Picture 1 (cartoon, rainbow, N blue to C red):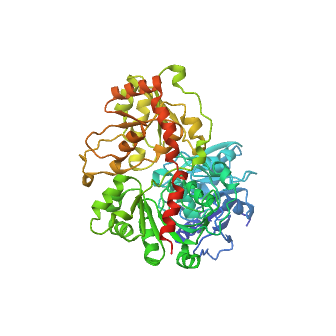
Picture 2: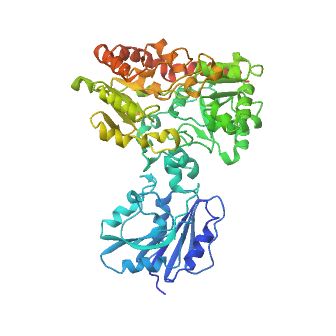
Picture 3: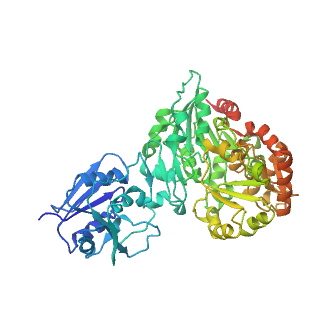
Length: 595
């Protein structure tokens, strides 16, 4: 029987779902089909039914959805193509119903209805059948995205009419292992979750329908083109955990002749950077055999970091190799470790490491109190873990918007922490522009802006502005257009007692050095009588614009536009807020504990 439909079945590490999918294929009312299961680098056995219509092909490593589907296209010949991901399911009438729609010569693509809502504006693979065309799926070197329109559907649809069947004949199975969830920030996905799950070796071009648009090849080209020579007296440094923001900072150590090896947690969030690092230079240990790898490497020092997600893995490495010199570098947030039940692990790291680095003086003192009698305060140092590489400062500035309209403009990079509808409208009433850069649809506080942004745009269209995210290559050029940058807005109520401090009180926001790089003073709510780390730093540097009300914001921004005192202070301070300024001190610490 000549097959009427080619069924493409991509699978990666989802072999447990595959029998259900294949049973639903074998149960189809339409029997004139051929199927190719593409095992795209799974680390578990993939078994297919003993049916002559089904073939299995394998790749040694994961090459991505686009490459897997193109391989399946090459392995089939039927004039209609349908898709059955290993974790999804068809109902018996699925193929027959789709073929009925494609009987119309004008129709090039047909879409079934889902038993479960997809929650995305594009058709899922399991829904679609289309005519075989010369179109190919976009592959990983060009783009990885959850938007199937960009990967294929829009090209196919351009050749004719698309239609729906109007019948529910398939189910899109929603579960934590879905590819789309590894991409979308609304499910705690992102480039580093994706990189970890699929073991991506090189830089990603990555786009999420939740807001991320990233080209790591272009961003890190300047670093990939450089050669780093290890000095005879250089240290072998094993970086353990995750690097969060500004991961290229570690190259300051490579520039000083030290060799770097990475051993990464598999529990990173989307913006918690893990390797393989997109700028190269840092070799990776195999995380499946990391104990053998660490033993063979025998590094001079383990530099474990950075946030609460890294705590369990860093603790496991410390336990496995208690004799290796070990620096625990922690940024945030001890309160989160308590909530997760991981405080005992974090406490062990702080008390047991040969040296500890914490983000701020206040965080250091908080730990000294919390672990009083267990930790020697002299072993607790201070170094913000999210400082950027200095290279990004060497970029041209842009004319200020206020030079044209005479009105103050302030930028938000990342989530608008503490900003809400009433506050933004109050600023607009006072002639203050709010520029929001890089909003993503993430869970929890990161996504709170979704509840008020549309109304803010409608009610203050000339004063609320939305822009794409700004990468480090554009910090200076893009952000220098503004008069100031927003830090987190919050009320501190600790009354000077660190025992009552929240993470906001202890934190040094990652956006602080970003805004300083562009020469922007920082808008920070004043909290008199409370211990607030970032407020202390801004007062010491002279880079803060302090306020308690929207009237205060308008007043301090007016003074800044007139005199530029905050800008001058920011330009003077920004060199102290890059990692390179502290790299030699870090190396001295490493040498002091190396054995």
